Length: 170
Image (cartoon, rainbow, N blue to C red):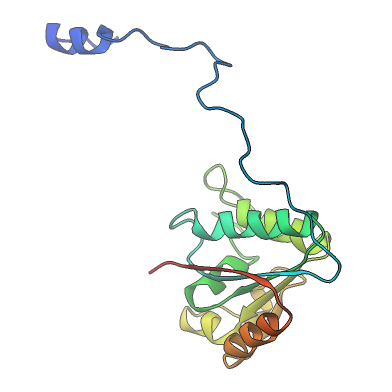
């Protein structure tokens, strides 16, 4: 065991740990807004321009799109720019499919679930090319798209009256 200085020990024991036992409520459970469900023909469209594992933006966008799908919305996700990297089936280390750290395949697994439950996933071919990724490396079921489709997809889903969630990360 490492020896601690008197000041290190004082700092360590200043506040008792754990301050709350496991299972203690830290936050209230009141949901402020109604739990909306899709009405007939409603659509939810997500644009993702964020890199896998660089922040929670991309992963949370997939979770939100999945939740919308489960609420009855026709739901689609469009990955473009660096966001296209989220769609790669070749993630892993030292081999594809191996997780070098817990959660490395969260996005892959969530996208597979989203597709299996009826969601559509689009991925910009130009976004792939910017990073040297190949179309054949896409997760099964991901639909490759032309670079000019990004704007037209947005127009398409806007005209359908979709709820649009646009995420962006530098």
